[in-house]
Image (cartoon, rainbow, N blue to C red):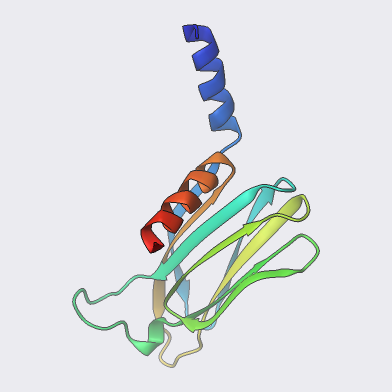
Length: 137
């Protein structure tokens, strides 16, 4: 294979792969939604967790969140209620904007929850889901 063919294949792979990795703060009682335009039949995987403000101690109840992943037509692909972490994986049934919404539970006094979130679709998601399956076996 020539170098130009290898470069073209690598570039195409990068174009077809979407990786969203972020960390954001969420005030208790508030919601933040993140959308991703996903092609029909594309594999998508994600993982999220509330960051512990006190390393080495259990995560406080003030850092529990609700998470929902929905399709462009409102179909639920994942939900987590009062969790501090989770994973999801699905094959998109229809093309369009898929949305993941995080809601920090209501607390008085108000608390800030830091959330780490990684969302992969396409080739990167395929590779990641294979690795996850191998680790579980």
